[in-house]
Image (cartoon, rainbow, N blue to C red):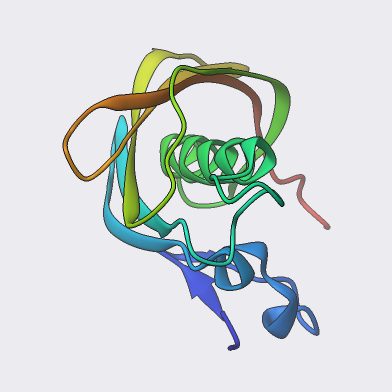
Length: 141
């Protein structure tokens, strides 16, 4: 699967077929200022013991928070992750998880998001916090 853009964030030319969101099965539901929502299947994202891999949760959380930071940076802006922490509250062994990234701080130089991941019953399975550096692209003239 090739991903050219994700809610307006372009994939770097030549890397459209290498996007992690496609490999993890992440689907974006909502992307707006201060809030991004998506889903990810447990299938394909498991540890050998059959439960959701913590690294998949982390990649899911960073994807949602980074997209929120890109939305905050605006046209011509950029965002890159600085710090990610995840607390895994309970395991998930099947179905879809839903993640919601909500802004805690959106400034000129940094933005921080809380990402809450829940199972299909609405039980919190993971809480993450992501801080991104925010910047504007430099002029080339």
